[in-house]
Length: 181
Image (cartoon, rainbow, N blue to C red):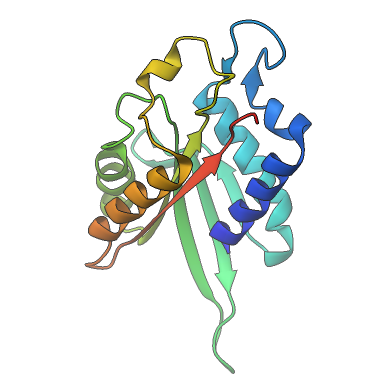
């Protein structure tokens, strides 16, 4: 449900230049770079709220999950039960990172799993990476981003998520291509 919604957002980003440019500072003139992770989280949360409304999902931005720990996005939804059974409630924690983040390759485990999911008994998590690598990016932060294609990044984070899944945890990754083409 959530990954499918993010795929719809991905189609919009790559199909409508004005939408993808909303994620950038100065996309038409000088130093050009992505807006911060907080803006990206707000942007994604607003999309999910609109897109998942008919699924009766509740999207919360920066909710406290445990003693002062605020995650980026928390989604609570009811999934239809089997015939005659009551619906199942699911909670998904979404951790959002920009591709320039210094802990990009470790935060799926240290933040999403160890800080938000395990201590709070939450089984489902999604690691969302805003991928901004493109020629337009020239504000200095691009030097911190891994030198990989969007597809290579998705594969890298998929493998990491698979390694963290199990023992009651279901971790997924999604690389959102926000490059200006």
